[in-house]
Structures are given as C-alpha cells and as structure tokens.
Amino acid sequence: MESKDSLSKRYYRPELDIVRFLAFLLVFLDHTVPNSPDPRVASVLRGFAPMFYASAGACRFGLSLFFTLSAFLISELLLREREATGAVRVKQFYIRRILRIWPLYYLAVSIGVVVALLPGDHRGELVQMGWFAIFMGSCYSLIRGGTATPMGQLWSISVEEQFYLFAPWVVKLFNRRVLYVFCLILILIANGWLYHLGRVFANDLRVWTNPFVQFQCFAAGILLSLFVRGQVLRTTYWQRLLLLVCAWSCWFYASHNLHFRFRNGSDNPGSLALIGAYALGTVGCVLLLLAFLNVDQKLLPRWAIYLGRISYGLYVFHELSLYLVTHIIFGHISSFASPLYFLKAILTLGLNVIIAIVCYRYFETPFLRMKRRYTVIQSQPV
Image (cartoon, rainbow, N blue to C red):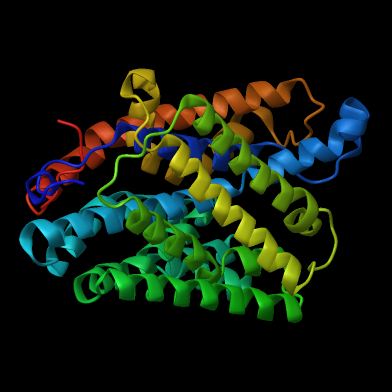
C-alpha cells in the first residue's frame, strides 16, 4: 500500500500517454478506414470483408477508451488530492480543466465557424458551432443529427465537460463505498437509456452521441481507479497480452454481432443488443487499461509517449486534417480498393501530427504552464 507521503508526490504514468495515443489512433482509423459495405472492397478482400468491416467498426471504441481513461485519471488525482490534503479544491479543479480544455477547444470552434462561412450552404454547420460554443454539441447531435463540418468530433468534448460538472463534487463529498454506489447508478442510467433507445429504434448517431449512454465509460474509469487504489499491479507479459487480446475481442464481437448492424444499413438492433454491445465496449476499455497499467517503462517508446501527450490536439484536428487533404489534394477517394487511399490516410496522419505539434508547442504550452500554478498532484512529466 502507498503511504500518505507518497500520495502527495507527483503522479505521472507514461503508459497512460501510450493509451491516449492508442485511443486517438483508433478514432483516426474509425474515421478514415471504410467501415460500411463497398462492393469494391468486397472484390478485393472477398470472404475476409466482414472481418475487415468488424475490425474497422471496433475502432470507434477508441472514443470510449478516451472517456474511460479520463475518468480513471481524474478520479485517481482527486482521490490522491483528498488523501494528501484532506479536501478536494473544486475551484482549482475547474481552473485546471478550463486552462487545459478551453483554449484549444475554442480555437477549434473558431476554425469551424470559418469553414461554415465558406461559400456554399453551410448554415447547419454554423448553427452547430453555436451549440458547440456552449458545450452542447452532443445535444445538437441528438436533436438535429450530424453535419459535414470538420469539427464535428467536438461533440465528445461537451460530454467530457458534462462529466466534469459532477466529478470533483462526488469525490469531495462521498466516501469509497458511496462512490461504488454512485458508479452503479451511472451504469443503470446508461443501460436504462440504451433500453429506451432500443425500444424507440433510435438511429446510430443518436445512440452514440447520447451523453447518458457514454456515462457508462466514466463509471468504469472511476471503478477501475477505486479497484487499483494503493496497489501496484504485478502482471506478467503474457497476462498483459491476454488482456489486450480479450479487450480487442470484446470490441470486435460488439462491432461484428451487435453494433455493426447499424453500419450495415439495418435498423436499430434492439434494446438487449445495444446493452450488450456497449457493455462489451466498456469492458474492453477496462481490460486494455489494466494491460498497460504499471508496465515496464523501458518498453515504452518515447515517440509514442510524446504523441500521447499531444493527443488532445491530434484528436481535435484529425477531421480538419482529413478535410484539408481531401479537398486540396485527393478529392473524395472513399474506396479501400483505390491505391491512393493509403497515401491519403498517411498524408492526413502526417498533417495532423504537424498541426498538433505546432499547437502544443506554441499555443497550448503557455496555458499548461499557468495550469501548474493550480495543480495539487502533479501529473505531468518533469
């Protein structure tokens, strides 16, 4: 068990940066790799096409991994703060989150407004940016559906911000036992909504962007933090590999047998199928985090750690990078069967990395330095 003295020290785990980068990479693949039926893809892959589509669909759980990791790290830091100081300083928590999230977020919203003002009928995108400006992007998706804006992924940031509304308060006010009950309530709420959305045959977008549905991932992250609290997980390499295989199997099964029905052009698969798919997705996130926690730092490549540190920028601007590469260079190449598709994906990723590096170095870093003034438990590398 960790002493109270050790709890007050820096809490930085580079393996979590690796998980951040992996989560981004999965989201990137979900948005770039074809994941709906295409006869040209079927002609190339033949009998392997269903497995390919299921694997591509499984990548969407990278966003669930982001949510689970965020809840794990936030609750871990708040619990350490409470044990080290005897309280949770809620005001400082919100200042830290504002300095970390808002500058890049509103820069992205501003870019979205500029794109919406370009020639063409983009009024829907402009209205969407207005909803994003007040962190109601997920609600816009529920009510109006999505648009083609390159900043559409910002809806998930609004879900994250909604999690922050209650996260510091529950850790401040509740003991460990009540926290377990609170997480159970979140899971019940998420599954209650999934049951309802299955009964009314809601479409995929309205299920996926529903913040109550995604709260299940936040609950899982908090539960994982409570589970590993004060412990160093002793896991062999084979056990970690098995956890990774099980995590991917959960996502693959959910995509192939349950959730993928949406993307195959079918109707809502029903309440039980939705509940099962999202449960498997969440379990997969927890298993993957367990596979990486306390891994030997000598095995972690530095370039991946760095990309994990700038993963917020990578995530925020990956759709913009795809938009620029598509409209400026390649046009609408959507088929996996095209030899230019891979070049398009590589150039998009390269441009995305360059944008994220520049933003992190020259735009985010000053705000991160300000954030350190309000930090109780240091969670950044020296």
